[in-house]
Length: 341
Image 1 (cartoon, rainbow, N blue to C red):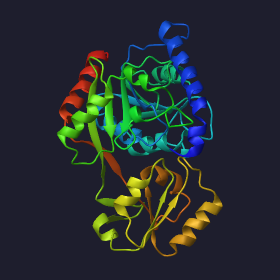
Image 2 (image 1 turned 45 degrees about the vertical axis):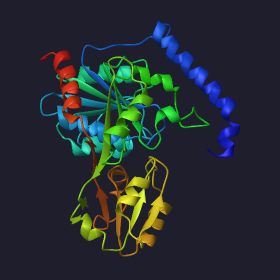
Image 3 (image 1 turned 90 degrees about the vertical axis):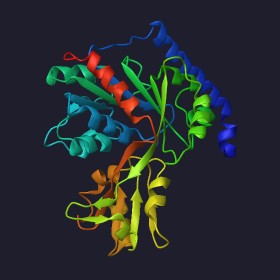
Image 4 (image 1 turned 120 degrees about the horizontal axis):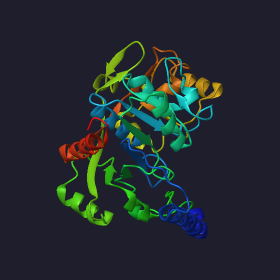
């Protein structure tokens, strides 16, 4: 923890008090919460960014979309629009944001919507798409006006919430006690070979309440990088000179997975909107080399960089163990709550 963050500790205490009071007012009914008969799965975290929400949402989409009519609802962070938008064939990334556009671009069988006011967003989805059977709320753990039916809390192996502090001293958006609202806590970005002994030690520190479940996952990288017009095996790519570009929270895992001694890595802020000067720098740095980026960055860069130069490396969430138990928990919840359950 750097000196400035330590100096700001009194403000972290104040922020913690404010967020705790807000949560308490929702709990006792002073602030209104809305519940829905349709299954609502909330995916979120206690900290700011970088816990793996996007691959977890995609995991749930793959798990559920072959059996149910599902929709995702996001805030649409840094989008250049306001209000409720239900994505269609003409929707752009700028209208709904990078992560929702990734879902829309990748999963044609689902509906993707954005609305900062999640209650209104759910109501509009059900009005415009009445056949919807399940809604996944992306990054909505702190959005208490919606009473989530099943809350999934993510925390990273390297920066677990129980060792973190409130903003601005740490990275928590609410106090650690917020974890009690979760039905499931998933420790993400673990080493693939994390031992059962270490899993048990971490589980003790999570201090699970009765009925809560915990799981451990890791990020699995694709063995192939893709562009609009070609693909290349990662093992072959590692023998080439290329540059890497990332505008995501905590990109180190991405860089470390692929880079070699000659790789230049360009880092930008999470959800960064690339300017003309950014693109000029990227192209000048790359020269004739390939440009490798994340899937989330790709949807922001694909119309700005020549299609034969820009590649992305997909990732997905994989469970170290307990995948069947997790899947069963989700499927049982949705199956018992839908109109067709």
